[in-house]
Length: 151
Image (tube, rainbow, N blue to C red; front, side, top):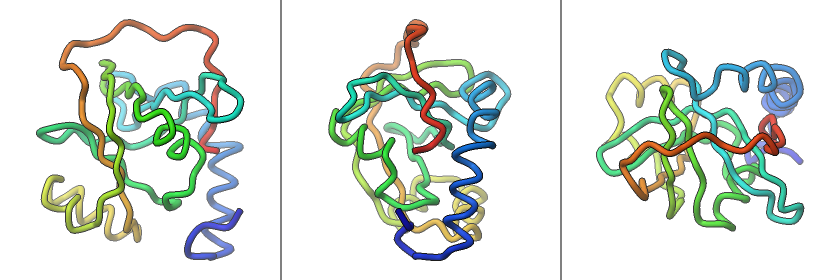
């Protein structure tokens, strides 16, 4: 499925990341001292538990995740359908809920200027914002999680 821009190069990069880079990223995603987070979600139709590497930025009242491949990626559709997920970032886990698509302008008001500029340079125009359900760190996830690799 082409992304919203329809660029063949972007689609090729997305496919490369999905099949090669993301599996490697999942080994470190969510760990302390690593930039990538891991979002745990449940498949809409399969019901399988999945995990996908993302960039998640902590903001005052939740998390913002940039959407470099647009709003139609499977992991986001899964999270919106369930209205919740778990984000592992920096060695901590957070239950998040109420995912909503926000604009570049809305994201820029909450992100650091450095991060906002970086995401803009990469051409990111869509973001999803989550509310944190609890500030308490959660336990570990079960071993029955199927890696999603960004589908």
